[in-house]
Length: 218
Image (tube, rainbow, N blue to C red):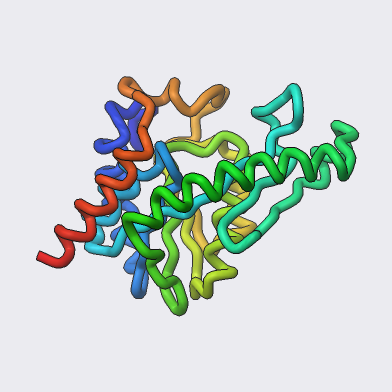
């Protein structure tokens, strides 16, 4: 267990990469969850000398409670539904479809931007390593696991610097392994566990991906 406050995403990624390397994964592909997960993933990929890609997913937030995830969507029209949240909030099919449509449009917009710079890294037969800068509820990462498996990943590892213990346990039932450096309680927001938690832009995401590609080819 490392210290509970990380300096920034890059230093957290270096610590995380050291732990991921111990897993000795076969044919790993590191998949950052945009945007904040990508700087962490870039450092992990560099540490284990694996290709870096993004895994684009969007959380479907409950109207008026956007932080509460009633599901998530990913590339290839994958939809994950959180039935417990739907039951608890009474959100109906029409409202769910409206939110899904709005988030799908945003996902497609970001997909066009990212994929214009880089084609997707094939996952068939590979060990997918899904990396985020922190996991609060796990809804987005659950969608990412579904996308990775749908794209033929042989196994899926979730790697993150920080997440609540109950979320780590939930993800262990969905992924083949979960690597998490710190599980502080109470958890609160991801940003409180970083001294520097500046927003990451789409252009930074593309730049990190192109840098990773050129460094592996050299």
